[in-house]
Amino acid sequence: MTDKAWAKPVEMDRSSHTYREIIEQPAAWPRALAEARAQWHGVRDALGSRLDAPEIVFTGCGSSYYLSLAAAAQFRRKIARPVSVLASSELLLHSPVAFGAKRPYLLIAVSRSGETTEVIDALGFARSQHGAPVLAVSAYADKPLAMLGDARIVIEAGQEASVVMTKSYTSMLLALQTVAARLGGNPLDIALVDSQLDRLPGLLARLLPKYGPLAEHVGALPDIEKRIFLGSGPYYGLALEANLKMKEMAIVTSEVYHTLEYRHGPISIVDKNTLVVCFISDAGYDYEVALLPELKALGARLFVVCERANETITKNADFLVELSSGLDESTRAVLYLPFAHLIAYSCAVSRGETPDNPRNLGQVVKLR
Ligand code: F1P
Image (cartoon, rainbow, N blue to C red):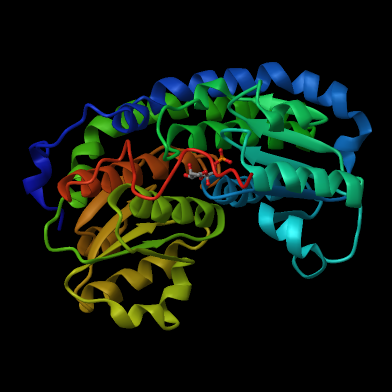
């Protein structure tokens, strides 16, 4: 059952800009949605019929690669065309085996900074070798990526002082959900999606005070040695990002899998010092929930985020976030991530790390 010890806030330093950027997501999201909607007409005018390319390819690095995976899942719900995702280095260096034969597509290049060398070089490769038009998605208008794109969506609400991406990821994901609806082209669906996305900031504003202390308590648990993140479908890109936050902020090893993949070998390491963070979907609900008692039987501590908890979840989740959003699994996807941000942040601070200055990391990877 849920550990009530978390009811009192964890004593920790919250003065960092990383923490501030995590908790200001309810304020950032309306801005991100407004920025995306305001720029859509410019994108449509700049790309014209090139928006109707037979395939869409996302590319990015690090968090922006994981964001691309999450965004692609959103796009596949709204458009009938193939949507592919490649880490920028794969597109740039291994396209024959990573992408396949040359074929027409629209490239959507994602980068918070707009300066990551691999993304910029991948844009140049796609343009010169594949003749692909490019939609750039970034937080900065005056950096190379946005300036090189044939069109751009700049989400200034995602601008961060932090090295690690938090609100930038969720803000750009919301922007891409806004674009996905518009590419679908149905005015009624666009209006419905916009109205649903507009509910997310208020939902998070309610959920953060309710469950944030729980996440911070879990991050600070002293006897956790292994940390596993599980997510599938629209949540796999989110689970990858949650895992990266844990690595980047807390400087610990952690692992991430498609939820049901976990049984196929990696589950062997689970013990009483293992925390498993599970992002429960709607489409996979019964199958994903069935894994929980198996993990508990092996001694794992379970942090479960779901829309609604059934009896199995309530019985097996040590720590439970029930979103009760009233939204479908894809539309509500961003709501899962802030709790993982707080788990990672709290774990970092409890281990004496400084998330504002993570070891071995810089805000941008430049190769020259
Ligand atoms: C991509 C990235 C980040 C990572 C670090 C280095 O940045 O890999 O995901 O956390 O900051 O850069 P960007 O291309 O989205 O600016």
